[in-house]
Length: 326
Image 1 (cartoon, rainbow, N blue to C red):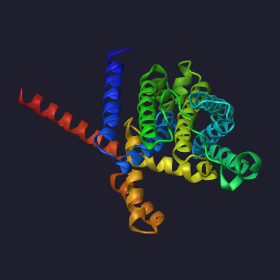
Image 2: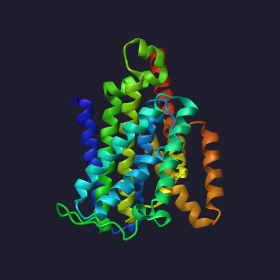
Image 3: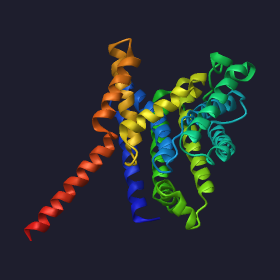
Image 4: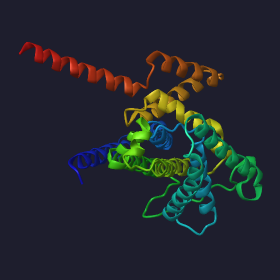
């Protein structure tokens, strides 16, 4: 393991330890609730950015894996045959298998054709959920809730335990995705994004690399869906509707695509804006859309992208100044 990976692992441990202390210092349920939702949508936005920011594939149907994760996990738990860790692992296997099949058909296309084909698959799942009432509950969602039996002393029926579990999954997910984008595989994806013809000439299989990125991003999106099903104790058709994918793209636009943590920052901004606007007016959709539009048009890039470029420009200016005084 490289020195950089060790430093990032240590930083992740510090972040999780800091989050774990919060419930001990104060019983702040709104904060716990916010972190749980941030883990859900932060993982979803980061996974989508593996396609958009690092592979150059804009997916309008990434909510397919979010909804698939919530329903597959919920059905596994309702069967009563699996513990939470086993159902969690099985759900990821299902997400990877579906990603492999769907990705094989989608990644052969690019640009708008890829975007709309992924959307078509997502809406196919949405229609299937609505029509397969005996299994999915139709438009009512999974009926009867989701059992949450204890495992290793963890009771996800308690908000404090769900908070710690969500925070842990967020930290682990961020660290894993960070290692992926810093690995030779991640550098190959950026090469494919910037110049697929040159990458192919150098011997890289454009199809196989894009397919691998599609599957990996789908698995991480499914983790967000699992956390959502635990959070609401159910699964609903809205989790597979096209607006979920749209929200993921909004989060990336707000936070940025080039900075690794940009989508996570965008998810935090989106959730905060949504909470504030919903509390102020009943026309929250109109107001939130206007705020996001002004935000994006004003900065013309994500917030973290803007901050990163600004700090880099200042560093370059300082170096030029020091060089000029010598």
